[in-house]
Length: 207
Image (cartoon, rainbow, N blue to C red; front, side, top):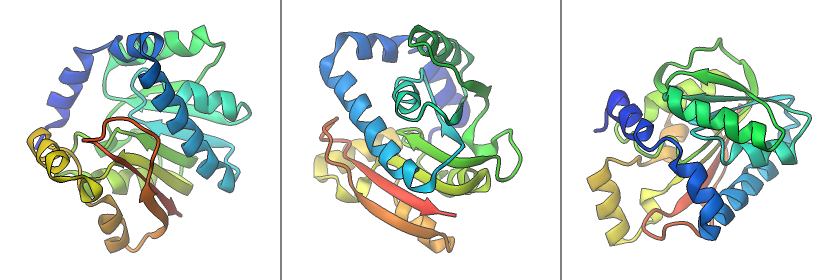
């Protein structure tokens, strides 16, 4: 199981890489843009006035979400201060702004029901073994919905499953959410490209 500190250090060592890939690799940019569009299509059902991207990284998804939902007050949470600096620069380069919060998903430093909508994009991914704790925190700070775009161990093939296990990736998000008694209104594969060994699914929890 990856620890929160090991995850933070790993991603801090990559600070700036996600922006570089977005700017230099068309496949990465397309995946980020398509992911944002899928997230927004779900968020709009709940007419949020505020939203949080948990695990915002360098804001390469959030910037597009903001472009598509410009009137929504946005925040981004991440463990890494260096990645948040990149996020601020990236958003400003697109004429966008968001409140950026340093902290982890295991103890989000915000009161209950702080945001109308909460979403993730491959943020729970490296936290295998801590799925239930993180989901509880995401639901705690949400008022209307939680939208998850995360790799699905359950739909991966044998090679994908072996890879996810070796990397300590998340499993069973839908079943955990249902076991908590939450209203899971959607759970489906997300066929938008990306790494075939790390196939994403979208899960929508209605509060």
